[in-house]
Image 1 (cartoon, one colour):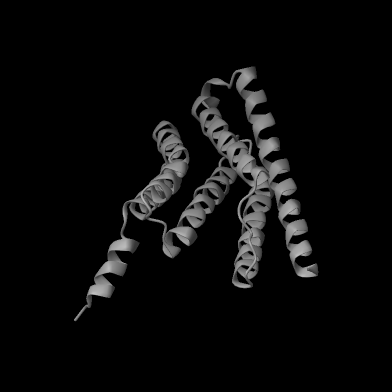
Image 2: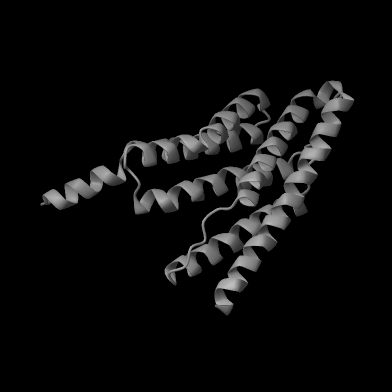
Length: 194
């Protein structure tokens, strides 16, 4: 038999921001499936919706006082799930512009930062996302979008501007991923020294 406290906790876990985050995760799974079946236009549309609504759940949670411990873990996990999954699935596709090693770099960085954040925050430190981490996410999203668009038009030959957009955005994504990873490593080293 559930108590009032249990019911209150369940309502807080199943609040609007967490439902939005869960919906973004479902959209990501659909994106991966569509990429696998080479249905690129719907994959692109769903990826844009899943990535663009990243700020909605956080804004809603802060605006209406619905920040939960579950949301603080679930939201960044879904962000990583979307990006890492997209890089992995695109790395398998010929002509995507994303090599397997690039997917490894992205996934490794996310795993490292997640592990450091967990350890430092359990130790009472603050390991919040910084501007380089947010910029990295933007570059990664642009790279995924450019890759999917390239796959859509590869049959007819991609125009030069799209080839350059893909090349530049993928390398910006990889380099910003590495740079922000080193930034978090430096912050973690400083925390451990102190």
